[in-house]
Image (cartoon, rainbow, N blue to C red; front, side, top):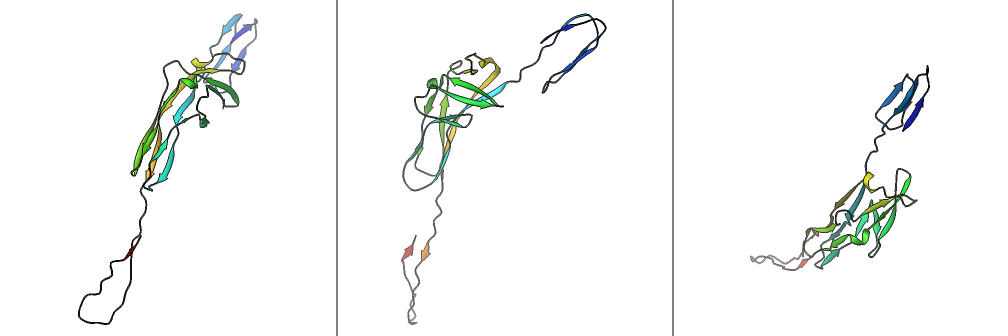
Length: 170
């Protein structure tokens, strides 16, 4: 930011959310650099949790800052701090499906080549340099199924032998 300074006056400038204030009391001009804090675009594999049922489960796909991206989509709009940006290059994101049958955790892997994702303003200006593009996996979790076993009841008149009933309800 540049300011023209006029003789005999003192100027004090502060910037919201900036980590500095500057004062000048001289003739000439002043130049102040305002740091731009980097924001994050998070490309993350989708997450899901299911309970074990003996069937194979699979999960693929990803989100950008929590917004689901449909297969084949190349760009979406993301709003950060009240400003809408267009994130492009999403067709370059690869996704390795998570799948499993047994109880456990399976990784929904997502990757993107360096430089493939771009961030533009609503006017089309490339502002990617002001963003940290982060890529993270998602998780398919298959929880253990709770099993309750109930033994059958039975009665008989005492005859000195054990009472047995091998019926069990799951």
